[in-house]
Amino acid sequence: MLTLRDLAQLAAVTPHLGDIKFYEAASFIRLAKLVRPQIEFTLVDKREPPALLPPHIHEFMGASLRKSYTEVNWYWYTLKDAVWGEGAVRATETDVEMFHLHGLRRGIGYRDMLPPTRVCLNPGCRNHRSTDNVKTLTEPVSHRATLFTLREGALPVHTTSLYCHPCHRRYHLNYAVGKARSVRTYYHGPPPTVIQISTHFFVEASVLELFGNMMMFGWLSAHNCAQVYNTCLASIDVFRRNNPLVFNVDMGQPPLSWPYALEMSGETAMNGFLLYSVLLNRAEQLACIELPHDCPTQRDRLSAVLAELNKAMEGVGHISNPSKSLNTCSS
Image 1 (cartoon, rainbow, N blue to C red):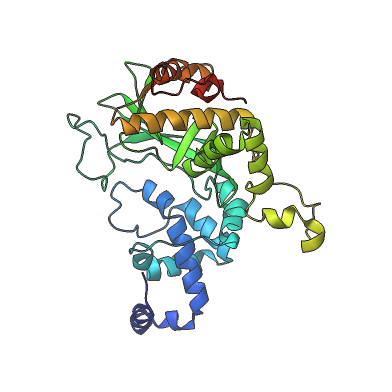
Image 2 (cartoon, one colour):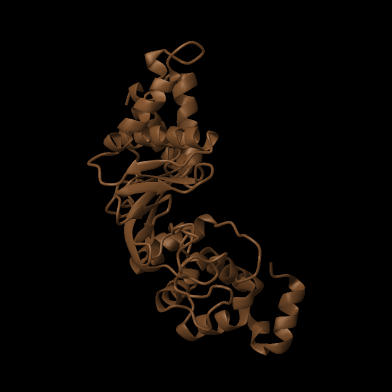
């Protein structure tokens, strides 16, 4: 993380830095760190920052910070090592708004999603590496989607997959799909923090954990869970939007334009809860989970594994109440 001493040393070797206001340098570093995953994605070797920003990132930074092309170049030249240094940053509401206003039109979203690896995970593949510093996966495929979060509302995002040519395997956010078998092989370990529910909808695991408890203790249906989310959590400033007279909110402002719904449906809530439950069960058993890839619906994809789990619940000492079985929760 950049310190005041670091800034003083930079100012000593780059005199023009002394003319920059501290908050401007801090804003540039914070926004650049937030977009760093997209910068890294364009690099083969991510261990060092690039000499120049990718054009679409450069334009985004300039539009968001109201800086000229030359100013952004100079800021990056001066501060890129600080951006590439350790230390996480937290986005402000203004940062998120900048992504919506200036990023989406350039293919950049706040919290865009990438595979958890840049190299093949098959130890026998020539694209396998012990680290993912040097990218060996290629052929990125991206599409737009919606991410439902617990603390930052519903977000318009892009999700990207990568391909391994030797293995004929495509790596997605939660799973890999081989060309030989149309099967989704989920990555080992506990459920990921973000779970893909369908092609265009993703939900944070913390939201699905909340839904599970709402179903258990409040006897809420998946439809009502979704309604609670849309009313209370779908926007970062929901308390103002729900009380426009108190907070003098202009409700005439047009909503954010996005091709996929920024409100959760009962179907997404139900499918998310079921998939999250399956992932938890397999993680507890330290087992790998494979699901069919080409299915008309998520319910069809989960039907066999849900039947297996419900069968395991039958008998003495297991939950036998049909209302508790995973595939009979009301949606």
